[in-house]
Amino acid sequence: MQDTGHILFDAHGCGSEKRQLLDEQIKTGERTFKDVSEEMWGSLNVPFDDGFEVMQKTLEIDPGFHDFHKFCVDNEIPFNIISAGLRPVLQKVLDAFLGEEEASKIDIVANEAEITEDGKTWKPVWLHGDSDLGHDKAVSMQEAKKQASAESKMANKQVQQEDEEVPLIVFIGDGVSDLPAAREADVLFARKGLRLEEYCVEHGIKYLPFDSFADIQKKLQEIIEEDEQKTGGKGVPARFNPRANMWRRVSSRNAVPRYVVMTPSKEKMFLWPEAFTELANKPIPELTKEPIAIPPQMVSPAQV
View: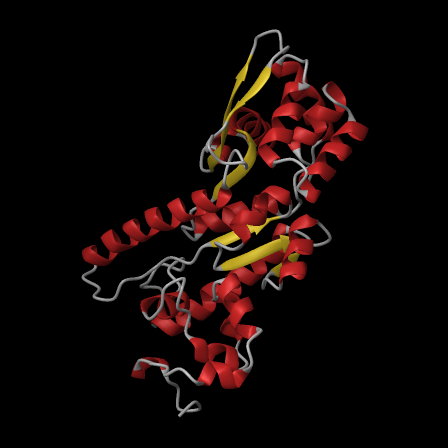
């Protein structure tokens, strides 16, 4: 429920007041996320194990997280943590709060770190050193999509399935570093009242608000059940969402099916947000000037 870095900075580094000033510099664009983060991590003066003690006393795990993670494991849904923080810190936290066995089932995509034994030097080793973000989560999301698609193709070959199934990418976030990833997700969950939700509201990005991981689990269960109905049973892995596949087979990120914005539909949240936002702001006459090719299998009797 708290940011691991913030807990360390407040207790053993620049302090709460300075940290909030630095956070504001990121928000206003005065300084880059990477630049400010290096100053924050560089302010720490505490051995790694001693720093973990304050996290162990302060951190709280979302009450719905254990059940949610079990739900993902039981349904063969790959689960990853994509963080702008330091991987050694996150691994230590997961091992302590979840147990090493459960934590071993979670892949962490984050920055490495160089920490001296006396704790006087903490230096991030950025995952994307040439980016102002240090770790560009949008890039990590794109890489995850490629990997998931490759695994899907392999699975399709094994079951001799002709149509390509593209896994649905779900992203759960709350803060500033999650903003780049927000536009890469097929389904986006944003914790209520925090920066990611504010960003989505400001930029008209479709998202699903949540208070606890229990909310997310309930919604994903609905998606899985709908998938199973559309695919005729449990023969197709739940993480392969035919609804998302349908859009992607006939479009790319630069060519979302335009007729969708003209008709009310629950499918809107699965469109790429920036494309939907741009199209939704255009008047209907302008959209209809261009011919629209719709494959027959995508046209329902109601639309005809």
